[in-house]
Length: 425
Image (cartoon, rainbow, N blue to C red; front, side, top):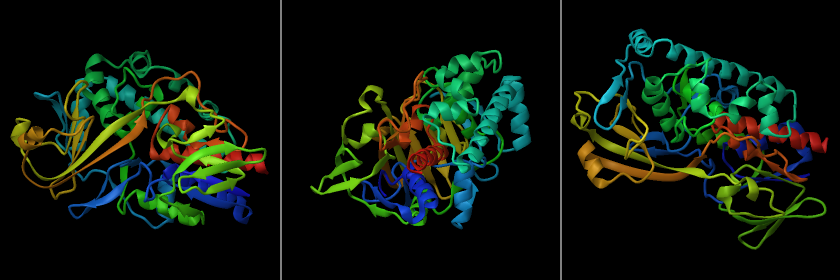
């Protein structure tokens, strides 16, 4: 059986690895990507002598798939932040709140500031983590869900993807007040997704709060670079990886599909797995199952600066290790110090103005900007795409209708592979 996987990112790599484990030598896997590198929106590179992440940066210790693959490949998972790392919430004029790098004291101070609201949010975030944990035994058992909605429904999370986060947070279970929303929830989700609770679905917001540390556990990085995961999975899949290969058209035939490549070659396959967002690939589908459910992706500018940050820009003696910003703040979403060597990572919705860089930094030794369509606008949705919208076509990106992380992309990849395996068995 010939299977074409479009996209060599974390999702496509997870699909290919799962298909190889299940089908063994019964399938020939082609993984196609228009880029010249493996990784997709996972993008690691060396900057100022250090490996940095311009795409997906962190994973949570509860993320079973990423964690296990890191371990099995002999990679190293390191804490995302060093001990004593501090954080501050900046509104453009003042820090509304700053941690002091003393774990228990910070916890007490935040509990007093936000009363029971932080505890209730933490409880909800932990509940989502626990429910997500119930997915893994079903994945291993080969359960094949027809859509992300059915997958989420099986663990009691589907309703969260249908409701607006701000209403969910204000509800009787969370009772999140305006202050907590303004000073914590929105700054965290701006850093994670470039979006705020007023527009996001409740599931994505809960996942964002897990990334903000509310579910306990640890936030981790892959020391060797997250894209090493993609390369390792594709190696384990024994896939024929074809980089710098653009698919122009995908045409359904009586049996299987034909992929028309930019170099005028045609690749016939029995099944196609789409592991790159159709909104970003530019592929012409015949027939087209995606147009009616098209998503808009959030464009994020990631700027790395190696230089001397001026604390007086923020009016303090020492700048927190990570600076989150309130809703409406311009011109950046967040700023983070990466390691001890004066490297800073800044998320923004547009290129940083030169005058801002000059006002924030003294001497700048090096800089690099990466622009990418990082994740969809995660609106509440009543209907989700199908994992298999047409015979022989599988959409592993369907999960991004409601949430987007490295782990959920791997879950979607394996779930899509399970469905394909069920269809051919």
